[in-house]
Length: 133
Length: 130
Image 1 (tube, rainbow over the protein chains, first blue to last red):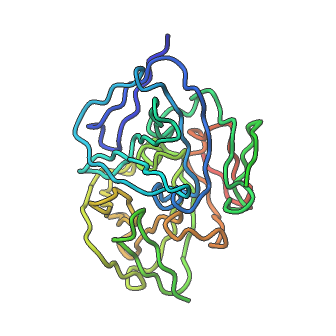
Image 2 (cartoon, rainbow over the protein chains, first blue to last red):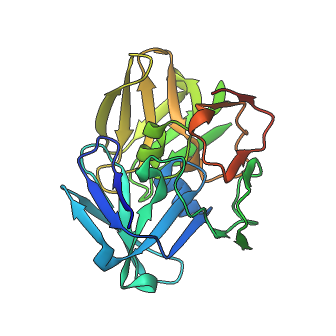
């Protein structure tokens, strides 16, 4: 079974993930744009018991569009958010796909959220995704 | 024109006057880790056209070029909203996503494409570089 490690920019916050993610998705919402500074976020969801977190982290809580608390963890000395938890996926952890620093990461995203309303027109998601909103 | 970039929680802002001098996408592994997305997008503005407001913490790393890059991020939410490149001391690079504006000028350069994830393409008429 594959073990993959996601890290912050400076490498001191590490999220070790066993096995395959249950879902990989892209989100173009404004909060993901601001959080990443890129024009979308990419999340891989893993069951919580398949994830171990090593290193110091600071929590940032944001209230999502549906009123739920999303709890993001970032490394306090470089700023990278590596993972987060949300009530909609209470038994799992979402990991920032870029934090794996692996251009060959699979599976590719299966969903693209806020695709019509928030996506920058020059971003072309070519994976066979379900497009929403 | 004035545009405001802000972090995830809104406490750190960069107020930018006028138009960016360069907008580019970077697929390097450092940009992937910094953003958690699969590329970074930056808009360079003349340094004197960018004014930061709010508390910031700094992170410095050495770029592939050998020059220092110093990132300013919000200590409350972690978002890096802008950075300074020793190689290009006259500009401030601002994270395009922090404008949360899909009408922001599109990129003209896409660099480190050898690190690009296969499922995403840059559809703007960009200069592509490995």
